[in-house]
Length: 225
Ligand code: C5P
Image (cartoon, rainbow, N blue to C red; front, side):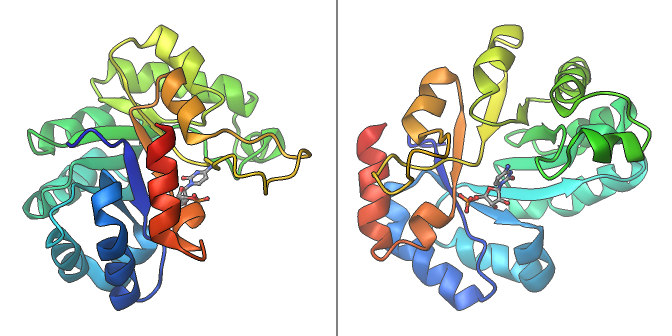
């Protein structure tokens, strides 16, 4: 892994557009994050195409199934040599242990705890009697004890989680550079602040992909780190 912690989230529907964007900013990012949408649309072929840029690939597949199936999926993506893969901590200890055991030697397996799209009411509706923050910490502990490399968490949580899990590998999305355009009504977390709080990987999508000049945006973010 190179020293730039920024993984560019390529959430673009077209493979050619995703490739062109990645090529443009390749010298100023540390890796590429490909999500479920990209993987369902373009599969192994799409990942192979992006591998040609020579950057580490993060497969954000958020796997969640019985242990045997998740282990099989991990084995099936070996050939893609991902540097990071996500699975759901809610799949349970055995699923996480088997996923880690099936992963390649150089692949970090990282758990998603509670999706930020779920609030306390949503958790209640699926029988979880806890607030999202409490549930996220519980699942982070479970992921740690199951031998995973780390978790996905927000920039506002990473400091606290880092205190509990000193050598954890923490993937932080939801970041916005402080370019003066965010207004003061929104509590933003900058890439630099997340890095300082203990993030190992900074996932950044739209601040680069939707910028008027993506290269300039990537360079500006890199300069803050
Ligand atoms: O918002 P942005 O475009 O920078 O998001 C980058 C990536 O981070 C997206 O792929 C999105 O799915 C992911 N993300 C996430 N959890 C959040 C916010 C964003 O996994 N709370």
